[in-house]
Length: 519
Image 1 (cartoon, rainbow, N blue to C red):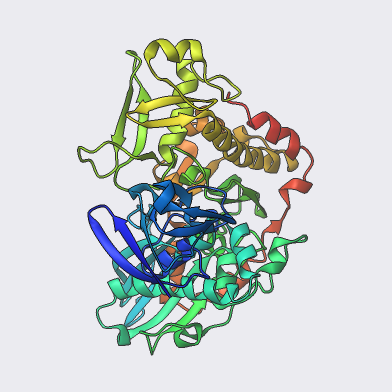
Image 2: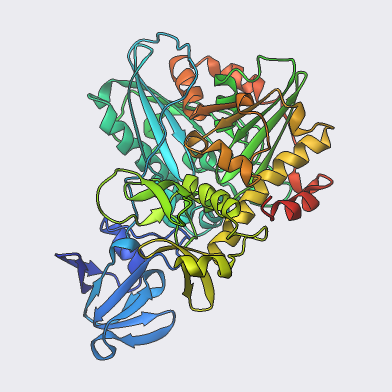
């Protein structure tokens, strides 16, 4: 074992290092998690550290930091070779655990007055939310990042990670550890917790139970199972809840999971037979369900994590210090609000602000329909910047949006917009015929609907036809927690929607290409 000195701000820590492990893994095992959103594949550059002293192997090449001086490298491909070494971790490389997690919903919920303590959990790819219920009443809520983040920021990365030796076990343990830590914050006496109800997408639920999600990653994307057994919590690896039993909401398909089944049921979407309505859960894997006169069709659009700030130079989670909304004033300056307030300069734009940026830039004329910056308009305002050959727009201080960021945002926007347009087209409907468009999820909860419509992320509908619901998955999990028999009803409801693959529907490719443009 070697010794590694780690500098974090004014703090210095000494760690024992297994030289066979890369430094991202070493630091993570010592509760110094870095931002490894690409799953440690040396793609995102977010786990940057600075080598100060010692000899290291970096992406297969030796680096003597003592001789060469401070060397910035990606920790996921860096190994300590010498008996001792020293590194510094920049503040921006740390994984943030203080992001906003939505634990509320905007509609009334009739919960069964079930006796005792019970918990409801929304197991998301990025975040996990939990509610504590006492005698059928909600008494607390909490949220945290999913500890599986170090395996990648999307379900495809998690599927790949599960195929590695010990990967499935590590992912299952990470999911359980995230939930257990949240519940320990909420439950005063762990031995009294009786029930844990979980709603998650199909991949997350498979990983939670320790089932391989491999078949979901290849055509025809069929999960190992759709319904999940009720089991003692200890059987899944929970250590602190000896009396608790676990139940999970069933999946509709490989990419439309129990979070949708539970959310649709909680919002009463299955109860209203008449009319034409669309339910959209805006997230990394954007699921949608179209109802036409009592017939249901569902699909999923791979939006990716761009609107969660992932893989963007300017992006970040909805955490203190992130810009959540912005506009461009007539004087040619950005006006914005920052989460958490404070006087420090903002460090990132979260998803809602990125949507505002696209809309306000298009309206102001310095962003063209291809998502390219108009240099003639930005330069006189002092807002044009460059990172090497890449153009950018300076929002404030050192925080800028690059054209490469805009590219990723337009792809995410196109996936959602094309998904909605294709689903409606396939069944002979148009946006104008929608009686209501239901929006679920944390991103939708704080989205400026005018900005979303302006860029084509959502269809141009009158404001009164939108229904912003909040965390419907968590609401459905609360129903399941207080009435375990509700699980049988969910098993029935999950069979109602007919699952469709977007890429197999006529017109999807054309819609996607059209949606890559800004209106």
